[in-house]
Image (cartoon, rainbow, N blue to C red; front, side, top):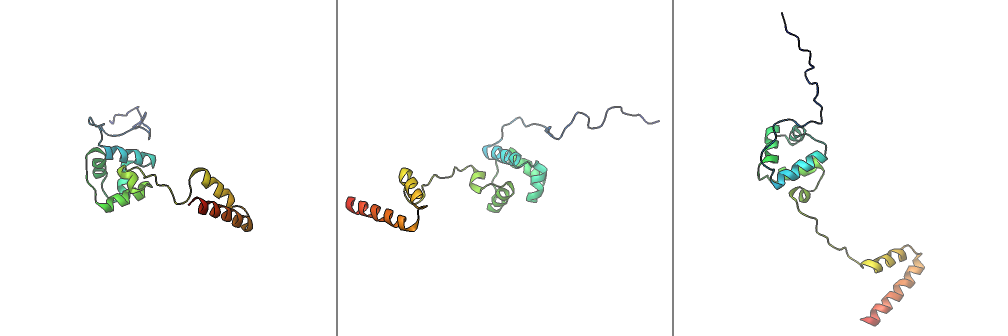
Length: 135
């Protein structure tokens, strides 16, 4: 005679629940960043590992231990997660100002660039005369 179980096999478990045993140690900075980016991309460790062509166990190690990756691995990881390599390694983008005027002068030139060509030429003449006089 076979015993029957009245409880459904996966009753009470949902896809949102975490699996596996939680670590007692905090993730290293790169691992924490990797974990955050992976979750933001909506991927599980197994899915990301599959896209990278490595085992889920190897990828889990990347999130839990200090590691060093090859440049190709960083590039592939950044592509799969949809981020830049700089974001992946935690570099802040440098705040470089583009060429040209800043602030109020930029706003004026932006508006002037929308004028008809003949009026743009007059604005350029006035500005050039002022710059030549000041210089």
